[in-house]
Image 1 (cartoon, rainbow, N blue to C red):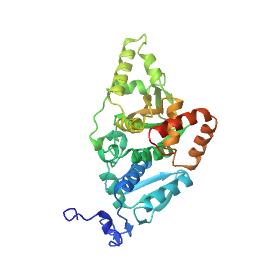
Image 2: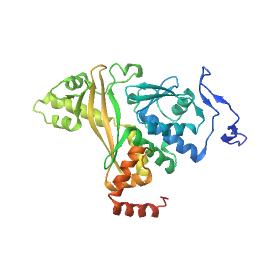
Image 3: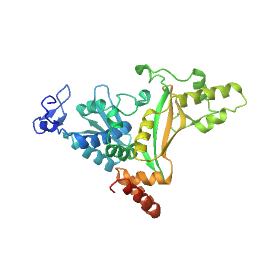
Image 4: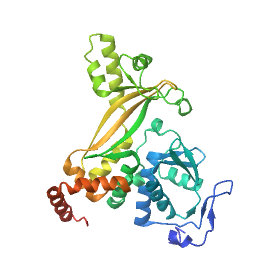
Length: 323
């Protein structure tokens, strides 16, 4: 097709079904999209997959969602690629959607890593990161409904591992911290225990330990802090780059370190947040959340700041954006 200059949409209505190796399920009446439409759909799906997807090694993908409105939006996005039967199961207050394996393979091709994302610490694929600004904004629209929140600012969290424990063995994950750091994180003196029995210490409290009277404790805190800042979250850095293409400033900081006693895993929770009210308004106008509840909260936020909204709308129009 490439040699003969035949466009991808030539295949539309010519293929009945795409399945996995077992020839079951799959995508019926597949639709082959390209160009700007493909860029936008890819951005939306990758934003969703980087948050609430578990992509298995065999290509099967599982999507977890507790909001029925958001679930409907996700299904509507998938329909652009063809007819798919999504097997649903109830799991701990969430609905698990089993996405056909051909779609899982597509997501892997687009840079979504199979297995536990915290061990890979990969950023966005060049296909997504280098897409048009229009597609980049679609990514941000679907980012906040999945892994983010809104309360006077847009904010989202990503976790990366600095020690794998038993979970990291299949990945050949090399620990970024020594056993003495784990012993400190196990201590009830320096960490708080959450409802699931996991140990947490904020970066602020770790910073305080740097000045501890006990030089050994101070040295351990310094080792943990070095690991935190030497291994930043690459996905958040790429998502920040996408936002800054639209002149939306975002600050990213590590919030806390978590130790999981059941597996011995240690992670760092990184948080990204719009830097100012103007940046928040700019985000709200250019790429409001693709979600019913969060979009409503954003609209209420904008109603209370009409003067600032009007000023920034004029700025955006002068930059060539159509609002």
